[in-house]
Image (cartoon, rainbow, N blue to C red; front, side):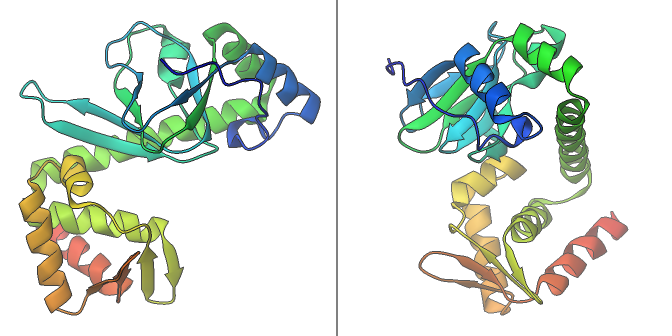
Length: 235
């Protein structure tokens, strides 16, 4: 079991940026702090914990598993992000699991009541929570539409476009770093790892992507976007 890690500071948590330094310190004292190993579970799908998960250091993957055991990945949360707010708000079981992606991932768990007090007492913070919930709904809507209307190859294109837009964009070129793992893309778009490898190889032969040691380069972001939108329009 990970040892208690505290106390630490919450200055890097974007959700808490509307608070003063003194208020963030008070929140930190209310948290339960733990470090996690790579792939160690932080929260469990359908679990009865209700704490909000503040990612102080490291990265966290939100995921679930099919009845056959296949991993379905929903989102990766970077340092400074948060998750688990739905269970803290509605009191229902967890809608997904979360695991640590980096060794020593540092998590601050904030209980539902102090989280609800923060939301009700700070309108800017409440808006940040609502914006994240809107993002979750939008991502879920896009994924449902893609699974319903796009083939596996096109879903890989769409996921690659999402990653490219989140990466470093310089004109028509986008840099995705670190280089995405085929299995991770496959779990997000519900296909096989071999399909992802084949699609990326095809894009490389067409000159649209270039694989480097530490990054995947999208040579023409607008062309990739047009490829995805043309298929969506015809679906």
